[in-house]
Image 1 (spheres, helix red, strand yellow):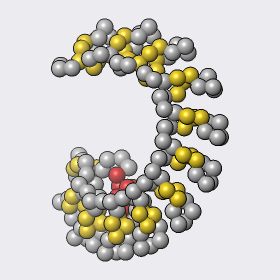
Image 2: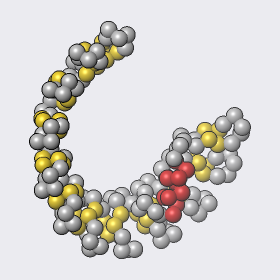
Image 3: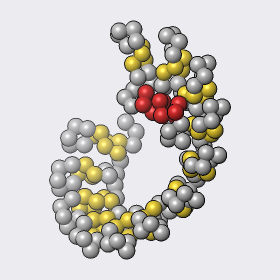
Length: 174
């Protein structure tokens, strides 16, 4: 296998991995911390005695936060690029204000049914919107990507996909 080697444990590991003193293989760039565990390069021991990733900082709330987060007017920390919307809530950097007065993730669109749907969703022959990759089965119904004909002659759907498809049709997430 290219880029991998056979370890003492009989399994293949990515080149650069190493066998740690704990008997496990760890990715290149990890180090053994004072707590006896392996951590990514650049990690550091915080004032709380725990290891934190490079770039994390201690906020005004006394907790560590990922690099780029900021304290909002609500006193909570939000991802870099988030913005305070007209509704008083913080939203993802690329979110937009829809005609319904709510914020939606970038790529969602307003369908003919007056609801917002995930990017790539399409209007099926049944008059409902379906997620990208959904297909019309031999039973005349649409099924989420990854569905297959089961031994009982009915379509089996991947776990959780039917719920996500239902939410898309109702415009709940977008």
